[in-house]
Image 1 (spheres, one colour):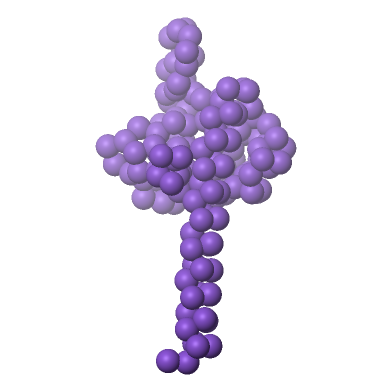
Image 2 (image 1 turned 90 degrees about the vertical axis):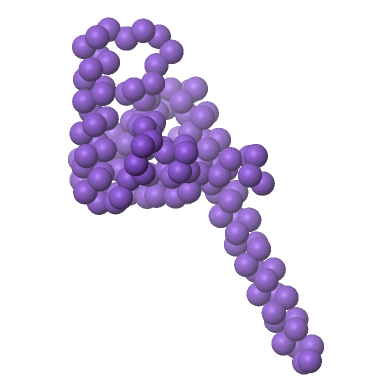
Length: 142
């Protein structure tokens, strides 16, 4: 066996592992950033609340979520039998400084997270386009 070919194969495997590790770490960053942003109030959800909202607010948030998912569903197949968390991006500059995932996002865009199927999508309802999509990787999976 040629040792140069053997080293090249090992380098390719190493590069592949490095790429996978970088991809997984970027997913972890998305999870950590989303959690921190909810806590900091940089993004807000329309359907999740720790306080009891008034009936009108809850209904309009649910309608907005349904409308967002309907628009998004015209561009990508959405997971069935799973209710996502839908959040509105409020401070995109803070997000961009923490993760490249938000590079092309704008204030007002929606972050849709499907936790069971581990998908995260940034969707612009104003432009009716998907800004970015990725997988969500939790720290337990490492």
